[in-house]
Length: 478
Image (cartoon, rainbow, N blue to C red; front, side, top):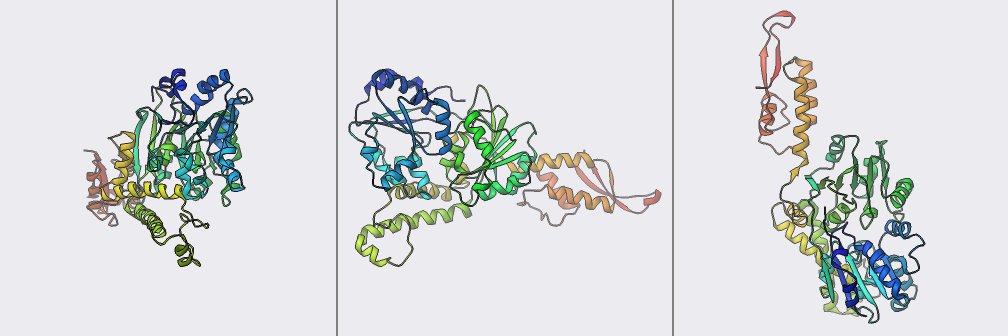
């Protein structure tokens, strides 16, 4: 687990160095106490000096957890608001300067939100300029575990505090290729260990339907699935920092800032394309002591990445065309067409979408150029060299159990069909030297050899008894 916290490198003497107009970048992985530093150390510093703090969050769940934590005790100094509330205020005619006028410290928690949510929220650009052009009489703090997209927009900060990443709490990192593996992974996890899954709303809800030990949650803004979202699970997370069900299927509603403190939560499954989302989802589990977790990540191949790469390239081309033609000519050309939302209806560029597209273009380009590019990029972020492939691990595990049950038993025609059905139902890797559709002895033995399973299937003719002259299969363990 991370052995250092932000409070280890930012003390009162550091805070005293900050001046009005300064931009403070706090970059460290999840669970290193970034927001806790605001709620504890900066709070005490401001309380003694009659200073006020505005703490911004990007999710209602995170805001509500903060409300639960500080209660009424620290609201004399700290005001909690969501980015979205400020964005709406500006859209209704408010001025950013006025929104910040009552505060001395503006804390942009999970600041990557301004970029990462721009793909579905066209208003994140409203506050983006504060990263480059802060108010001169305010001290702005930008907190994030994933600043990569933000750096596309701005790299200059008056003070930067960075902690090295440490993901040694990941006991095993698995990549899986097919959605069906999620069910297999879950079925192979001990019943007393909890599982957290991140993916889109449709997949998460469908996975949860037939599991009595599972719940599904999503954003209240999701008009298609919000009625299916478990309010009990959300309440438990806010008040207890954990969920009582065994499996929780979640969308990005849970991806930022929220704490889950549960020793029994040992497995996290993530189906997200953007590596920033992967890191943020992983960070929901707060590691206590020497806890370990198993991480399962959906592999994203070229078929998934190429369309996204083309999409962001088209977005950036549209901006270049806009710059070349100018506002009036561009609007005239596309007057009756639905165009990319990076060019807004008022004929201005949405800079959050633009710089987020530049970030995505760069990482997707690197991924498609390299063999196993997605895997390599994620492993680089996590600092992990040794990975496992879920299809191989769970295929081998399931086949071993099946083979042990059938060892040294005579399998006549009906038994052979039963054995083949069970055996081939546990095959997940179809990229083999032998065609698995053949389903005969040669095919089975080839799979056993390729998977390095210590078994061999033979065909024997019975020489006596009621089955005389009948052929049976016999599985041996040499």
